[in-house]
Image 1 (cartoon, helix red, strand yellow):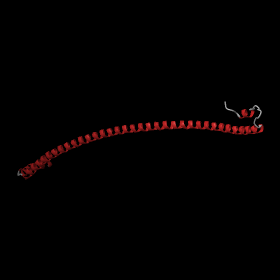
Image 2: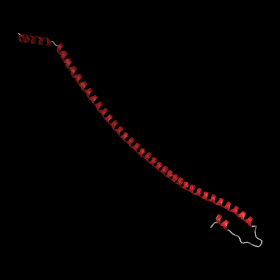
Image 3: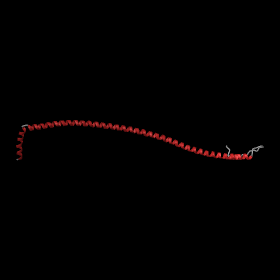
Image 4: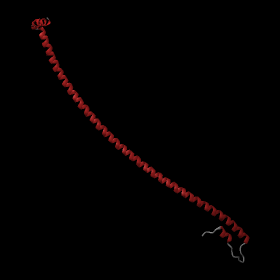
Length: 164
């Protein structure tokens, strides 16, 4: 156990035949007591300061560990978000490609149907034109024939009889 200033103060020396000067020894011991008290006070203050700094260091170490864990969690969350976004983007692209293929196929099918309708309409138009032309030629031939005048004579009396 270390000496205390009180231990130094209460220390008594045996007197010898030719011993030290008592006043000089007491004065020296008083000086040692003062210095020793000062050293012990400084030691106690420093121990308190060391304890306080150790506590603060522990606190900051905990904060550092917490921040490191938070950073790791944030990085993992960011990676998860990135992976999920990439998966979602791939799904959206696949869906868009599927829809684009469907739209293209529908458009091609409609264009084929329209092309077939156009061809059918052209054929019907050609048939109609041919029949109409034949009808007009037949009507024109009938108008140009001599039979038309006879027909007019024949019908007129019949109409006149009906009018009377």
